[in-house]
Image 1: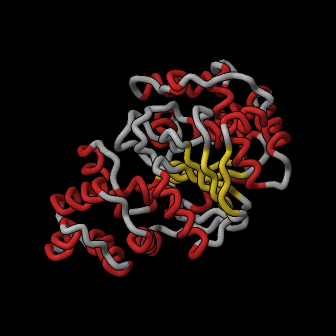
Image 2 (image 1 turned 90 degrees about the vertical axis):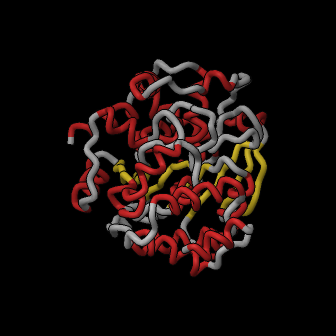
Length: 334
């Protein structure tokens, strides 16, 4: 470990096998907390290479608790986090809207380590009981259309380092890995990335190593989701595209201009829960609604061959009719 750290501090990159071995050694308790902090901070000073990300990911996927939900044509909507924007829980809201539109969602997430509330903080606060039992998750998908995978329950390695990550309170390499390690490996993924260089690395990796139907999104002003505040880079099985703000707004026939302040989350978890319920109840601001709807629209467009405009209308109907909120009520009642 000492030699590897020396090489990393000399700005040398790891081979895929070396990166994989770090996670394996960590799982065996052979890497101490100081080394974990060192590794985490190194990748805040430089971007991990494609080979490093592949190696880290392979180890985490091999070590995770496996469950089989392949029978469902489901989607995960997830971001790296760590963009320091403190937005409200946009991707989680989009998940419920997509489920309300009749699609299946297998959401993967965790407690926040670098922002006020991650998806796990939110859902736990709402009363959702985390589980890693396949039959329970399958039951949720069949009866409600959505289930949630709390990452530390499926990735023992992440559970081992969760306290250290929270104490660090900054974005780490594990933010980068999070969206890539859904243990179900759902057939469809909408991945938000706050860093353009990482978005490109994701794209190279998915092209070469992962067969899922995917789209990778990055707002050019640094958000890890579509926020309508700037143009969006979009990578998918069909290649690379740039969506201008004007084009995105045209999908919903909108002429509004989003104020980034409107995207801010609350000052604590309770405020974020209130904001979440408010949006699901149809009481969100115009800006909040449009941002959530455009993310749901892009997710729906991965699941079907319909136009963005038609999928936007499906998302809007899911929210306005109360179907999305009803999905949450059903999920919490199981």
